[in-house]
Length: 178
Image 1 (tube, one colour):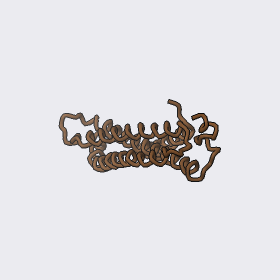
Image 2 (cartoon, one colour):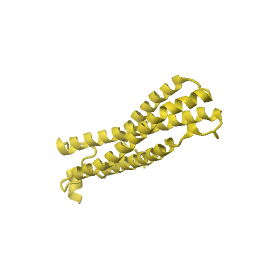
Image 3 (tube, rainbow, N blue to C red):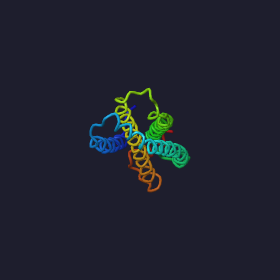
Image 4 (cartoon, helix red, strand yellow):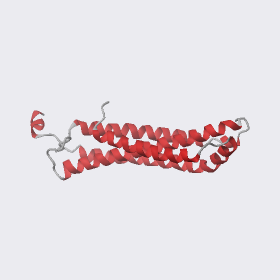
């Protein structure tokens, strides 16, 4: 699947947010197993809330994309196939984020810190995994939002402002071929 410049810019925005969040994690330094266990206990509620929020946001985005399709698929639509491929990319990514967030929401609800079977030195690994998961999910949602922003701007330019020279707008020659 080829990526448009719009998608590449959105991914760059997600990578930048990933680096910023990752930098905050790096600034915490190394933890002992006990410290990590305490931090896991205190952060699990926030991680559950984050995953729940991402699930709700991605489900809402998918529902609103149906409205987007209604706006961009009218009989007089002059949008190229690349526009619809871009929307499919957003839908696929958003669905993946929805599924991953829901799964991690369930995993984060496991009583890990209450278990006596987990060795003390594993808690720092578990802590960094939970931070990594929340960072990746948050950054992925940033990518989806930036991709949606680009799509909305393109629709406004083509449909609302009538820009005929936009790269995603069909030319009159293309309309006559159909």
